[in-house]
Image (cartoon, rainbow, N blue to C red; front, side, top):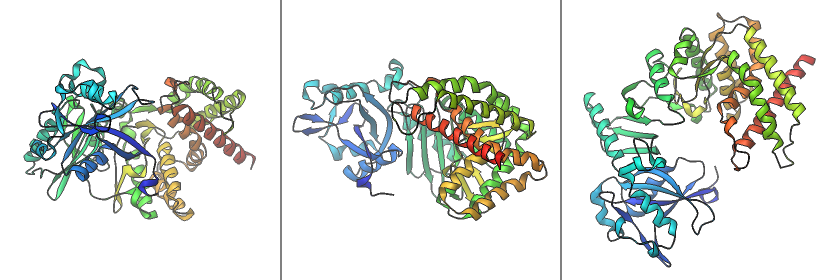
Length: 461
């Protein structure tokens, strides 16, 4: 990983609120009042960096509340802000007189008018119903106090006590991920909102049916779409370079999938995505018609733009592959579409799978392909790749015919890319907004084209 000073950085202007939320931290710049600005490495979770930087600069404990943007003022684009508060209100005295009553500031006093607009926005936090951009159970000054009080109550029922230490990994009006320390153990609080509301009922259903393979909640708050779970033992697979750990993950994946065969319909009812072959077939024409438009909109000369005829050929082969896989007679099972190595905890030969926002029901080999791709990125060698596959297939040996396995291994690398693309907001892409999704979708179609060529080469051989 490159040094921090060589990383691409994101800049956040900080609205640190004081004792009762009516005071904000301001400094005098050369052109007027300014709020502080922190830098965070791009692509990283923002709250941990912000809280750590506040501790470094001012020696105060802070809580991140929510991010928002203010339309352009003097700046060329939107300015990003993050609202924060003091965890211990009494610490505000160490920063006096930098704390100023929000209601007393004037727009003309600021070096940047966006700072003034942002402060005005924070004054509505306790009345968030009036602001559709700030709606959600955690969009106000008292959110962390409500969360921590509930956590303390649930810990007390288990004979545990929160020791006052916590780590925030995510903070927004409807999403929250916080680790609370309880002496020798810890618990995780997680709350979800759109577009991942399904994660709450799916998590509850998985915990009830497959507790051996998932983190089992010890308490839940349905009105927040939130739950509390004990911190699990083990290490993230992402931190392991041992092929045996990856093989354990592959074996555990097969085990939970086999256990889910009789539960597939119930899991669909709980909110998992439907990626069964019939559903995939029903999406092919709409998807590839949209991909023709997205590919046509490409203005760069590289990578090469696929022609409409090439995309039609990919669509036909995807349809053929799905039909062949359907005829193979492999049962539909639970799938994890975000099966990266950070979402798998390994403890000896037992594994737990985390973060089921992208749970689905479909052919089990789809998830194996996602795990396999992450294994390849880990670069653990060909021998390890064979061990990974054998560990997965050994669990299926008594349930699947060898011909069905060969069909799945030949066709699911293609179908898995198609299924992954379907999970993205492909039908809502605005071709003129410069978002990353058009480029990502084009790259997935090119990947499907390469997988089609691989299948065709195999036929010729």
